[in-house]
Length: 181
Image (cartoon, rainbow, N blue to C red; front, side):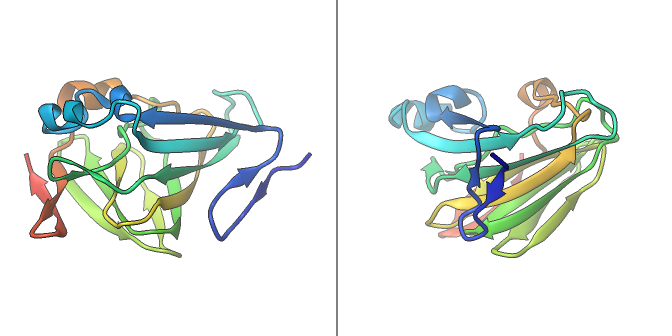
């Protein structure tokens, strides 16, 4: 069965689609206010991902396709977000396009300079190589976006675990604001 995309939701369909999810229990150390994260139900869904990997990981010249669905919510004053990563092959780029909801694509270069782009239905975002990226849901509905990246890019989550991002997307007077650490 071929893989299809529902462009109203971002959902991928087909037997070749793999899925994973992250609950708040899986995100220890991601949010600034660890006590606030621990006070929330550990099995609360933060985000889920669907992946279509038509070639083996590490294949040069191949592409992967996927989507992410981030739930609305806050941990303290910080929006639900993905863990964030650099690519293991640092020079590899990626595209995101927003299907539904509102969010912020948070980007950081290797020197720690951090900025963001507003995500809304139809927005397309180019993530250059050597740029860490994570997404926060700044809206009150599910944020979904599609992604396409090289199959040899890999993921480096460890650098983010150890060094973090240079800024965080926080709710200030009910509005999203990127606040330096």
